[in-house]
Image (cartoon, rainbow, N blue to C red; front, top):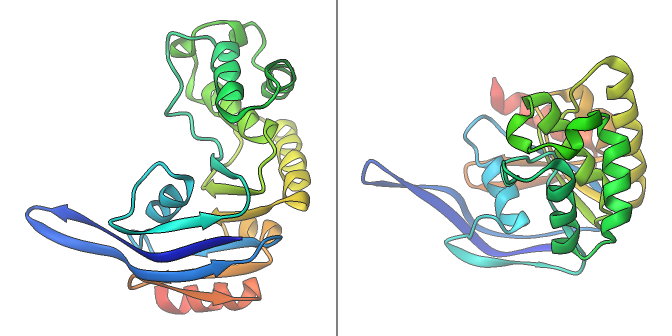
Length: 217
């Protein structure tokens, strides 16, 4: 369960305060994979960041009875001078999971070879993405937050990533932001449409997609 208790958030732009989320009161049930839909600039990534705890709302609070992931595949917090293995161990300690188990999982999953023991600043964007996605999937959360996270690499690696991701979704909840309706249909069973600072809830993801597409026209 994730509860939004009077959440509001806006930004100052050229001296103007522009609200993105207004007085949001909503409880998301456990065991659901939820699509978060809305036009560009509606506040989807902002809302995910608030849920993840990386951004503070202007008012209100998030209440949850389970563990919530960082945004899946996010590589922005890696320390460039630390190796992939060192970054992995650091994240393991932050989230209280076994460092050896997570390191072994990520090294096998990411398939970046000797680069795993080299500084992350030497990585290509694709290698960083593989490392970040591997760490995300190596830690079991009650709710995963996905913001346009797609695994990079060849078709075989993408299939492997999808299989691991689907296994996690079978055991956990998720909130997914994606412009790909194919991904939304593959991984989500219900939907949220963010519009004009509020959220409309749909028990069927197809109804959420129809509403989103109507708002986009």
